[in-house]
Structures are given as structure tokens and as C-alpha cells.
Image 1 (cartoon, rainbow, N blue to C red):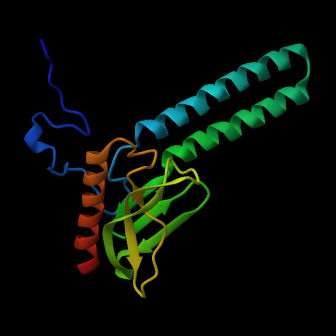
Image 2 (cartoon, helix red, strand yellow):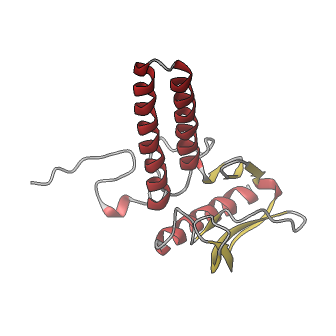
Image 3 (cartoon, rainbow, N blue to C red):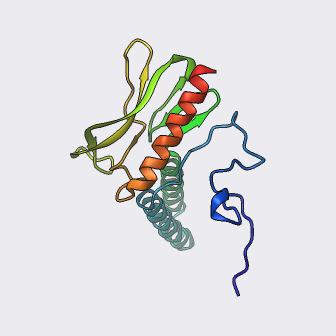
Length: 183
């Protein structure tokens, strides 16, 4: 017997999927899509690696080598931080603007400085590696013609082999841009 229930991201029926939830706050930064399986798998692998490093640190501590255990603890903290940062990477939107969060840098552009948000065909990086493939990218063009690196690509860790998810996310960011650039 199926037991339907309401969660924060699901509605009872499929027709209500596009309706905003009552607690939607357009002032807070949100990612308009879910992290992709490649990104989640990479973060999970890093967390698994950190658990082994912590286990090794515990064994080293019980053996009596405190500096070695401290080094293992420090390395595990760095690996956990990298896994968490990897999960934050992506495009974020709010009423205030659009934000591109990279692993090392974050770029925020207010909506009043955005000339356009559009999807283009161009060479894009495959899973963030230097190798490029032909694909789609969602770009933000700043006023004055200056553009920033692509917000989303269909070959990123979030959208590889998930074309429909890329289209939905690109449409959502474009809709946010249309709504808040004019208002």
C-alpha cells in the first residue's frame, strides 16, 4: 500500500510540481536545480576517503605518534572541506542577482548589471577538466558586453547525460533573470 506524504520538495500530485512552496524566500540564495550524480558521487568518495584517513589517524594515535595523528586529522579536515565545497559549486540565484560558485572563487552579479541570460552552443569543459566538447552553456552577459564564465553547461558534473535537467535549470535561471532584471 503506497503511503503518500508531503516533503519539502515534493507535492502530492505531479501537477503541483511547478507551484512555489509557501516558504519560498526569493531573498535567500538558492540553487535552481539539484546537484548531479557525478558531483554527489565525487563528494561521497571524498567523504569515504576522509573516513579512512580518520581511521588511520586513530590507529596512529593509539600507536603513540601524536604528530602523525594530528597530520591525519588535519588532512581529513581538508578533504571534508573539499567535499563540502564541491557540493556548493554551481549557479545560485536570488532576488539580488546571480552567483557563480566555483571551487576556489565566487562571482556575484546583481540583476541590474545583467544585460541578458541565454543558452548558447559553444565548446564547454567536460566534467570541469581541460578537455572541451561541443555543448550548451548558460551564460550571463553583463552590461557593457562583458561576459562571465558559463553558469551551467550540459557537460558539467550536474548535467552530464541529463539533458532535460539542464533545460529545466537553464529555463529557471532565465526566468529569474527576466523577472528581476526588469523589476
